[in-house]
Amino acid sequence: MAPTVTRLAPSPTGHLHLGHAWSFLCTWALARTHGWSVRLRLEDLDASRASADARADALWCLQWLGVEWDGDPELQSEHVDRHHRAMQGLAARGLVFEAPHSRAQVRAAGEGAPGPSEANAPNEGDAVLRFPASLRPPPGDSWNFRNTACNHRFACPAGPRTIHDQLYGDRTLDPSMVWGDPLIWMKSGVPSYQLAVVVDDLAAGVTDVVRGEDLLDSAVLQSILIDALGGTRPRWWHLPLVVDDQGRRLAKRHDALSLRSLAAAGATPGRVRQLVRHWCGHVELCGESSPAELAGAVTPPGLRSLVAIKARLRVTPDIVHWLCHGP
Ligand code: GLU
Image 1 (tube, rainbow, N blue to C red):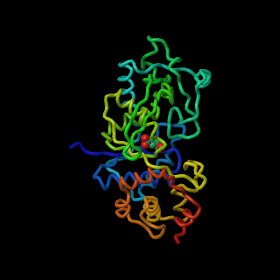
Image 2 (cartoon, rainbow, N blue to C red):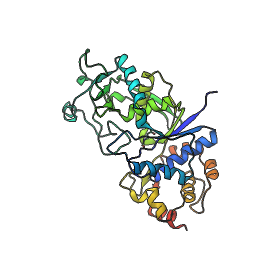
Image 3 (cartoon, helix red, strand yellow):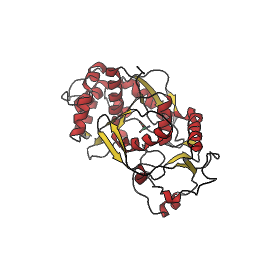
Image 4 (tube, protein in one colour):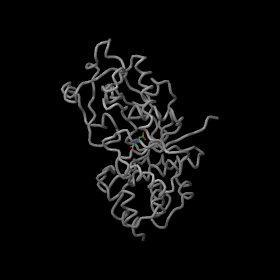
């Protein structure tokens, strides 16, 4: 039987927070229970945001939490040759085109909509600009991948697509209505998130992708890229999101909920693991949890029942107080 492989894929652009702890502890626990191997990939392609400090923070956080991985961590930025080859394959099939259009030009085409960032979905703050097929260049010279210092887009087929998620079930959407033709290569000479994640997961033989539900729609787009590259779709496990006490997804603005700040204020990894068990419905908020106890508490049926009740995992001031000071 082919080995089963999952991955941890933090973007080292800020300090990891409780949302990452939830996601990475669940990934590790599922891997441990099912015998999957775990790869660590630092998604550092966004040179304007990635930093050495954030890289060190990510490694420190994972170790602090007791999350283990197999082999050496991989830096995504060291594999641009691999992304480049994938682009050449797509270009040979006539699926990519040069798109020097400015954001203003795309916006003027009248179809901008708020959504995930166009280049790098996990980053907040940028809105997706739907690139309509009407802006595609005519057949001919622009359908190539010769100038790597030019933005390139993927000619996304129109029509609804369905993927299956292990926790959320079937998800259907039409990526051409959300992204239009997504940006897959940036004039800075690196792939966008959507292409890089697919190429690197295929190269690592990733069979099981565990990550936050904010990327569930992206998985539909990614399934099209995987098919175009001739790869095999992984099993997707999207997890309910951790939110603050106002229901907002945790983000960089929540530095007080970063693992580094929490640890400095007295939080212990055993209590963070216990919080994950608590969210999984197993325990009251008291005591600590070992990695082995946590692994037993994170189960597919348990996670499915969180999805069924549309759970949002809320970090309240009481929880923060307990993490830092105990009962
Ligand atoms: N690097 C992405 C993030 O930190 C995760 C990408 C993925 O898991 O596909 O949000």
